[in-house]
Image (cartoon, rainbow, N blue to C red; front, side):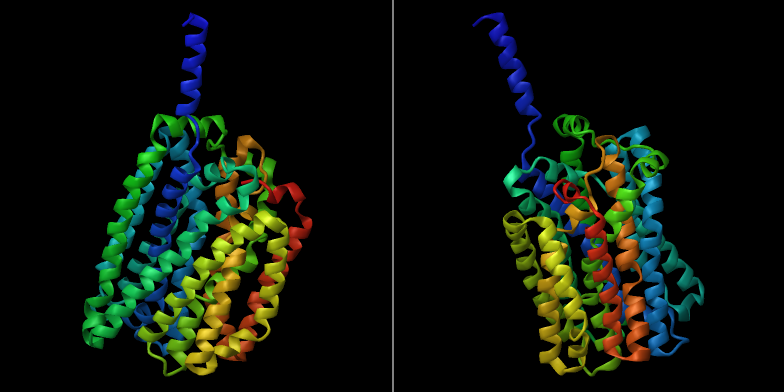
Length: 436
């Protein structure tokens, strides 16, 4: 073999060593997103059935839950600040330091909630401790952005971009299924005294353990030389936030509002219905949590279907169609929550199907076609703002509306999200929904 041929073979092997394997990336993405959403739903469920009684016993039941939802929103407010802080860590110390620090903060904040004392034990300090832990979770979620979802989408085959865009979204229903079943087990098998004393704490310990496993799974990929080279070659490197906003501000705003229909529906079929059923019906929490888990199974199937549909009819067409369907759903479906177990099940199944079809492709709308230099940071900021505006206050707003004006009014919040999505899609350039 000639020297030139040997050199060519060496370059080919080097190129192959840096070749992206979408299947391998997908595994890391699903593990990371499932662990994050499990944390998310453990806190969300506890915000309905635990924290109102444990932390706000001085108020009536409705006010307790509203206070709890106000604390729930703190993580969404803190998340953009977490992105800013941890992007700086990434630039200075690298992705491994960023991920380790962020997930350590997330694990610490989560396990701290498991040891939370009640209001009867420490008074108002219980509220401040829970708020501090929730802010810690939000900061950590901002730092947990690892760029793997963007890397996955950029290395997806041209004709399968919709399919690969839906993979990160599977983490949401999978995390909800595990969290709902776990809480249903403890609520259904323990006395009220035991559950509120120690039973509710176990899901937070499980969340901590899952975070540890997810950390090692993600680090195994992100810190390898092969993936480090991939991040560099795709220009998925953290840029300064001020510069990113200056150059990509318009696209960030459009990207943040494009998925609002699915993000608003996200809480309208997860956190809000649990709170309504718990406060205003005779349905037991354990039974409704199982209904939620069943609905989430339909959500998994719908997310998978969204990938096939997006590749066939186009992502933008699917997002427009699902936003219109969500707008129609908002006009009648909330009233099903007052129609007994059958009505609740129909609401949850229909809601999760619509959620899967829209949410399954929302990552494509969030990470618009940013300039390569700013893609990594802009994608993270867009996701943060989409969750803040679309989901952060959804349970609080929906419960206030429903409690004061009736269930149908809660659909107004959902309708506003659908309108924002349609407006953002109309303003966006067609190319913005074809990339990451």
